[in-house]
Length: 301
Image 1 (cartoon, one colour):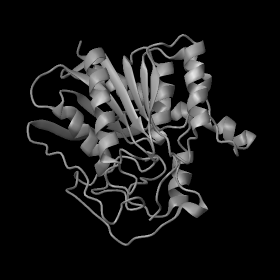
Image 2: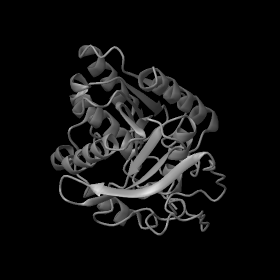
Image 3: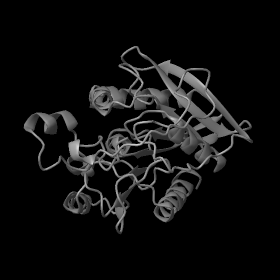
């Protein structure tokens, strides 16, 4: 399996292999039952959050392009209404790590919704072929993804258990970039936490890749409609520190004083991913505490 050290997947010299796979209870066949085998570490002991005291379900709702978008939902039992958090996956979609994050948020009093952004083409979660995973992810363009976020916000606003006036968004790797983009696009979002998503094009990007990846967070810092906390690793080989500094400068120029980026010394890409070799428990716990603090202030205050 590849040692994932970059937001959109590995490059040729990043691969390391193991034969272990891990699976957990299924969701009626709608979502892949386990952890993404393309990234699962042989020695992984992922965090497992029980669903007791929670309501969990698989749902679908209509996206702007007419697609019935699947999503995983976890929320506290009871009538609510609960503040909403949109959970944006990494490149592997809604596998067990993302579902567990939803349950962690639900345990803290939030209604967490994780849309399956990639399944129009194919669910990347069960795949081991990283080239195919990257093809699937590349097909999810900016307008489609923003449309899916919009559909998620609309659907949540129709649920009696959801407080659609209090909405956060968080995402990892590929999803970290989406957090910045969504916070710049949707006034309904009150706070965001972006975990090591790309901020600017890679130095080796072609003009076509730069265009395809836009809008880049560094270019839309002035459009942020809510505070975003960025959590990044100093040793992230896919997101160099100069891009972090460029984003900090863009935030400063735009007067976005409530948004910031925290960098964890020596932390690699994927330091929160407890099913990967990149997991750093102390940094993950610190970042999670900061997420809860921001969401507590903005969504529960």
